Length: 553
Image 1 (cartoon, rainbow, N blue to C red):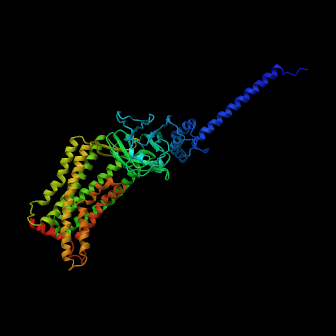
Image 2 (cartoon, rainbow, N blue to C red):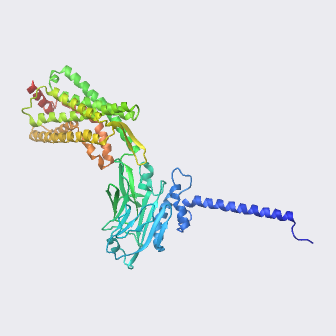
Image 3 (spheres, helix red, strand yellow):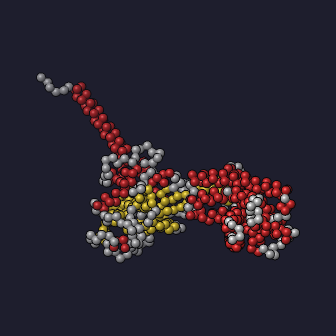
């Protein structure tokens, strides 16, 4: 009896075997694909074999807000923080060279006579720099005193330097960088340092990490930071930043992972908030400035002395220039880059003109205050207000004509590091002209005004101390008088000098400066509409102005 299979049955079995093999292979590929998809979750613990390290390093690009792969960013950050410890524990002498990870592990002597220098370029494996070599642009300098404070378990110690290219994903970004689209780690470059098996903190002589880079835009801030594992964010505590033309030097008193953060001074969200605050403040100021000018017209028609007094005329001239400046700002900030280059040139010139008019009339307010409270005698000037008017409106016109002839006006754009526009308006396109005709002009005016106000305040407080026993509340009246005068001479503009201190001062400047018109209206009202109870003791500058005006007639 034949027990073998016939030819058709053999063909059928071979076909079933091939089909089963294909199914097994497909199942294996699907399983491998799922494993790779889940590699960024790190659900099966931390594995540091070369295959796993290379696979997990790809998560730097996969894990982003727009990515589709599942990721656990916190696990990935802990994975790389422990990677150097793994290299040191295993005493793996040599280098790691992968697309997103470069590392150097070597045994160094603790009895070193000079600082150790290493390179950390993101495209190359870190290496120790010899004494006779030139210093590389990206370098780490470990002070010799660092090795002296290490536990003396022997004459050598293990050293690991890791360079990560974190790409544009979410790993090692932290909450603040993820919320602020304009900020990022410079060149996606993170440097990790570990020496021995114990944490190194509180170094008396800090280590130095130099990051090379091109010159950054003036509206960007560079900050040296380290990764704070307890907070899951970048932190600058214990690190100092020294800016240079071709690089930045970071000095830190501990060892961990370091980077250089690039943040815009004003990101898009902040610019929008500040613009809204300024626009609202300017709108309110314009209303009160209009009330001030209307009130002056009514008083001039009803009171004969208003036709001869100079102080109200100067106040109204300042109010007019400030009203037109606010109007020009609202038009300019609302128009942005709309219109032709010629129309943008005109808007910039008009905005510049009324800005200089405002500065000039604030300076003339200070000059008039000087005549009233400091010089007092020999203050006669023929056609006094006419001369002030020619200076207040004419000098800015000459400056604007000179600036325009140099073709300095155009579209002014602030961008972040990724070339995203945060603000556009018609302004200066040449920084030199901006510094000369705005910054210098303002600084000279502000210093003169501040000096005059300080002398006037000294006079006012001296007078109030003499009359304090005769009339109650003189100190408060003196304080309010100085505050009112400070609004006339533009002390709120001085807050611009403090804006480099931080974002809070920028908000304070935007708020108080845009409300200058409100302060002027309050001063004008109090000065020329005193109550019956204070008519004999207030408005000292008004009475002085009356005497000053009569002396010129």
